[in-house]
Image (cartoon, rainbow over all chains, first blue to last red; front, side, top):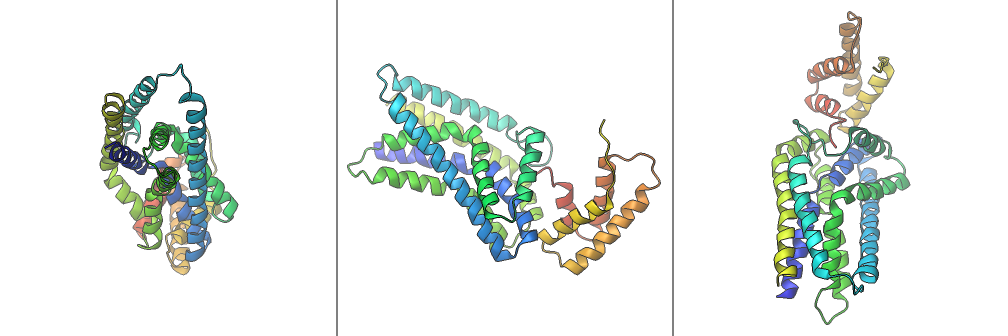
Length: 238
Length: 81
């Protein structure tokens, strides 16, 4: 039961990360402008550096959370773990509301919650990082940091589940960790597939994003809320 | 209030980059980008003051005649994130 609950929570966390649109959008801008300066295959290779950069940043952040939780919080006799879970569930529920109402700005497009100056700067960086692999790698890492605003409580939940995963085999924890890191990139991989395999261009992809905006918003908000409900019912009251 | 200078070379370069990114053949892109820029110049030179929005609207209207995707990408280039 507990293993299934953990896997359920991890799956929900994956959904929550998968519906965040900032990294795939940065990737789309990067890929679009990179394809103007490079051949199709070179663009694909360069986009690999973005994916690896983002993956590395996700891993670094998860390791950092693991370190803090394991060494400073969970071993602390003064800390009641239930209170910690309440705080996390509260933040997730609050974010769920925020994501529903404010993740996308008002209007027709897919403009996100970011300040306009910051959004312009990120766009500009994504446009210019289209030649050197090191720039692309750095862009991927930066994208991971920007996504952290909403992904942080989800990452905390993931690490808590991995730490508390009940299993005799010690290999399950690193396996879950790396599986989560790879699967959390699913939306970026999907975007890469749209550009490379399906040969879609930015206009087609952006039109589809606008069409599915309400769906993304509802799913994102629902996955955060469900995660909060799961934590309250399976980690606090069980 | 900030002012800007209408830079034809910059506009041409930007449009050509967008066209290349969309996979439009270079020859065709060069022709209709040149046509778009010259039509924009002719339309806007009658006005004493133009805003960035005027410029964008005119360029998009001209581009739509040749390639809808290019017009769309140019119009939404700062509205993706």
